[in-house]
Image (tube, rainbow, N blue to C red; front, top):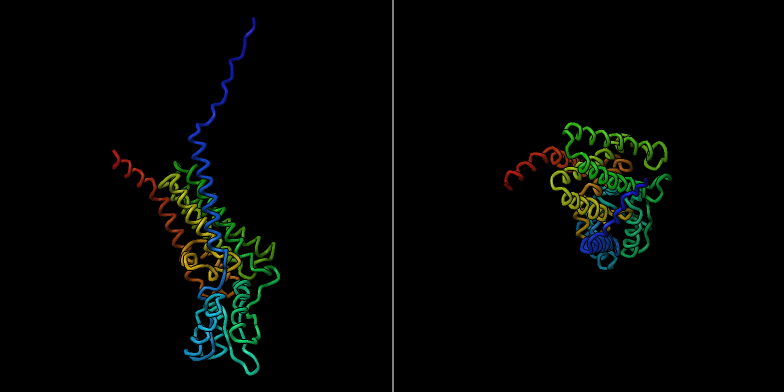
Length: 329
């Protein structure tokens, strides 16, 4: 007696409509990413970059007009009273460069650690406007980060990883208890921050001298991004996750400025930059490592606001969904 195995049903091909929708979505995503990033980076130039000038207010205004008329970018000239004040403003990042008149030539103070490309652009503009200048780099980059890329890649890497972690937590942790979710968010953020500081400072030697500040800022960035993504996913499902990707990934990375610095971007991206987690983190980490935590309060507050908002969204999601379900009946 023989028995034959039941025939295996051939897989049903996906409906044509779904294939078309998927293709249209992929094309839209491709063109959106290319368009947004090209709009941000296709023509980088100084955009109202603050520059201290040891001169009167009228002389500073004249220099600003002369530089802007070159068509290479724009500055915001700020009159200061002494070379020491000008130098201090560059070191605490109130300004990005300083002009100090001298007997033989005009001195220009820059800080390569803020952004090498920005410093070079300012040297070019000021040199053409002022004639012979002598350049002094008051905060050079160390050998471990000779192109100023370490800060950018740390922030970008943590943003992408935080987005993936937050999205996964929203999808697989929908029924998990709130203390578990918050514990996982906090634990991974702390471990991620410590891990990044160990790698960047003690192992690679790219960002040194501010271990605990780096660890804290990295942890805060992970929490801000992951909690936001998880909260949006728990509140609004796939639509919330798509919104998180659009804001935090697409506009967050493009407006952060990368190695250029956000002050080299067009107005739209410059305005967004320091209000989104990645741009705020790049500034905070850079200032913590290279500028003795000068003017770090604002980007830290931005990161804290995103983290708190994300945590509140995670906590409130079940109650919000229940309220919407009752309202829809």
